[in-house]
Length: 68
Image (cartoon, rainbow, N blue to C red; front, top):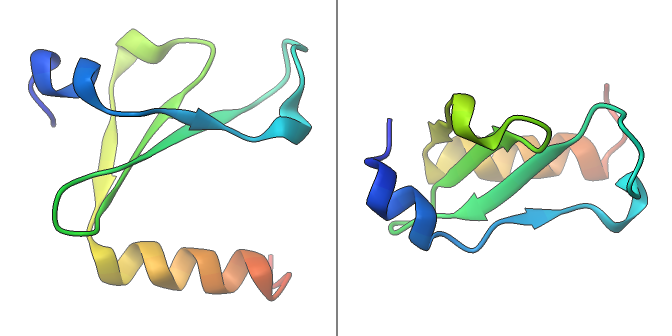
């Protein structure tokens, strides 16, 4: 878990494809050391999941390869 003050300092990004609908969407932010913070865009105060650089790179490779 990231301390609240540090979480607020992250630069959160949401996919432009998500639009403004009430659908399911995640926000992502890079963290020091190459990791990735992930949170629910509809409920950003409910928590953050942080993964390391290796997991981030594997996730992006999987998404780009359309292997879901």
